[in-house]
Image 1: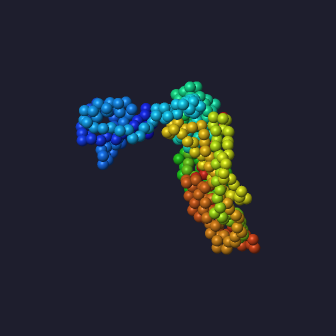
Image 2 (image 1 turned 90 degrees about the vertical axis):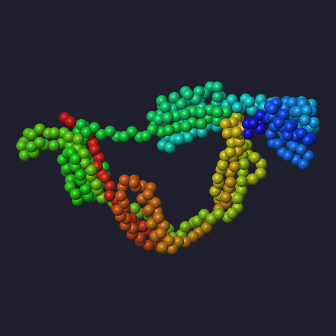
Image 3 (image 1 turned 135 degrees about the vertical axis):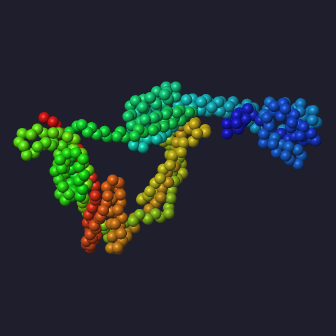
Length: 400
């Protein structure tokens, strides 16, 4: 791509070489350092491309090998400029266009942020804008190293950052730091309380005085393991000892779920009718939007999908123009009726989806009980999700 562009800028010709000394001609051209490409053998001889300067050097090769050369095609910018040299207005427009591209290439027209998973994209984008990196920012005012250092300094969530500007595109690559591990100071006195209510199924105590046993029902915030011990409980006035209570307490918990599934509903059905509209967003004119003629949407109910494309010269030189293409798909709402079995299947899928979304992987779902009650208009669903999970939580003790 780069070589072809450079050859077009310098100009080249395609010539036909005939004669009996073609092989000697090619060897002599290679010896003199003449670059030949796209060589093709024909019935009369060979056809090949050569630069303008190289064609002048081939005259001596042709004379010594008694071969004949003939130009069959002229290509490149020098020939194009020579052809339109008398059209001053056109040449002025071309020069103005090239100058405009040169000026526009000194600004940033695309910013890509990669690697952020937990850190919000908008948060990073707003921070970069505050540091001067925004669409349309002059490149000479930006420093990749300074932006990189600012990201590392202002965001504890980022462990590594790289800001890379090439052409009119800036790529910001991030690596997020691992969440800090909770450090438990075993020297700090603490109680163990219930993080939530439940039926105690297992208590494993490493330190502290258990206040509950298996089979007890506890409420949220209730004391499970005490961090205050009496060395001699039967002796009045015995001094208290404060320890860091630590235990693993498991409980059975119950989550009720109630909802209704109507027997009649409306379903979205696509008609197959589609429409498309296009618009241009001019970044160099303050994101001015121009709707292109043709297309449009006259549907009353529709879904739409919009894609954006930013053309450019190679990947590092996106132009300050964004083409937005919006596809519209028409649909109608069709009344439907579901049977009692279909309603029950839907209820089961809804409960399963809710368990997947709302329950952590550390929680064991050991049972789920579903009761149905049919009414004239809907199926009433009552479900009870039974889980087995840890409920212990440590809180520090204020020592008097």
